[in-house]
Length: 294
Length: 339
Image 1: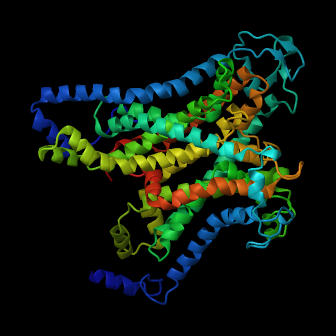
Image 2: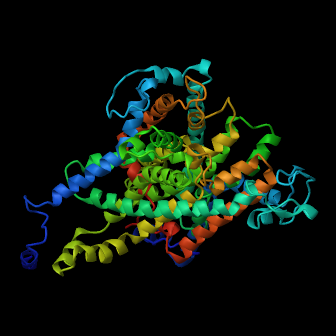
Image 3: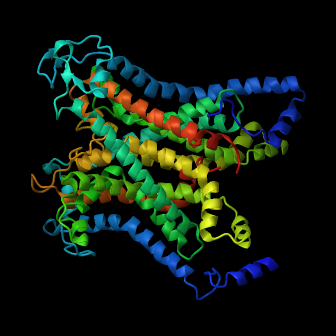
């Protein structure tokens, strides 16, 4: 400890962190402020524009002016060829079913990868990880032909099946990392304390695994909800998802990019996600970084 | 990738094993039963992935050796289907259009002539965005790792760009980069951002960096948090400068997490589609390999299959280089145990 004092004295001219008057905290706050603005400003601008009258689309005033809900009406206006409610429903079905399948199937694989010892584990994990990095375009071409031949173009399964190709590996990878961290020895303890295997699973393992599974479900759902490439090629008007709809929006005037309406649509799609992410912030960060750091 | 699972045999596992079945033989038997049980649990996942990935891939490879029948857009001649050999591959790699006597270099403007440009654009995007994201992500992570009031707000805020769908991000930045948009107004410029070559490239790069830097920052932050404070204290005591502490402690210790983050992001940008497809439609030199594949689907599926196979091989090769030579081992990161 005495050396610390000596060093502090030696570095008297260097900025020391724990002094009340030094500049280090201020610098931190300034940089934190820049990060905050960088991350939120575009998002804020989308919301401001979503509530702005069409005539003032390019008004640079940085707060809410010419406030209106018209853009949201345009988004859901079927007479303009926008079927946003149906698009939302389609996205919900595709992302929801994809998530459920990935989780139900993936949870067993993750348990095996995290808990059991067996030959070829690295190979299996490498395959699963490789699958998650797989380029979507490499799937689309053969599936385009297959689905055309069997009349699946424009069906939900035509969107769900390719989505599983990236969401299942993601689910398995995230769950495996979570399961590794769980105190499985508690299961053993419960058995020793007289629980049956079923009780040990229900009362000990399930409550521990539920948050991990839930977090993985959120990550998988967001991934599937945000998918664009597959949906843009393999959906039709009936099964078009929100991301595809937003990319091809019809506004009030033809031949004019309906910026305000698109920003309104973007707001509708994004706000639930942002709320979800902020509520489960800690879990999501844990899920995102699980596996990458050990 | 190591061939054998580097799972650390924790003491409690060993104890549990010997507790129930002492002796080496029964331990071996236990391993075998575990193996069988493991593959039973893995079967649904492996079968499903086989169906949704291996089947299309094998199909694509078979298709890539077939000729597309119909009018050749480049030559105007009618082409019969049938076995194509490597013609679809030479079409892209050597930029040769037509077949038989009509074989020749692809006319400018056709998709075949764009292959190497698309390859260059894809790698340009990859190198620039990953480099920018790494630097910015590192900076954000270092700030977020500091203890200050309101840190939670910053950590929540960085999740916002990550949560926004890429299609929405593309439209949002398309709007901000519009001629009358906020970016030109703030900069006092009159740039046709999405309408001319280099501005279009930078508009896409900036959008991608905005959206994905948070992911990078969070991964790096997770790596930073594993470094104990005492290490820094000790280095300070030894008189290491801030720069020395960064290059000799932070960088080496964060390297595993950083390499995995860079690997994930690199493979992600190599298949970039959404941003250029929505912001420019691939115009003005922003056609990536993925966009070229999708454009080709409309002109001939077999040729598109060859291109998508090439794209897949390119990405596979880059992943291999990362894992083999740069030590980005995502598999080990997941299989090896506790911190």
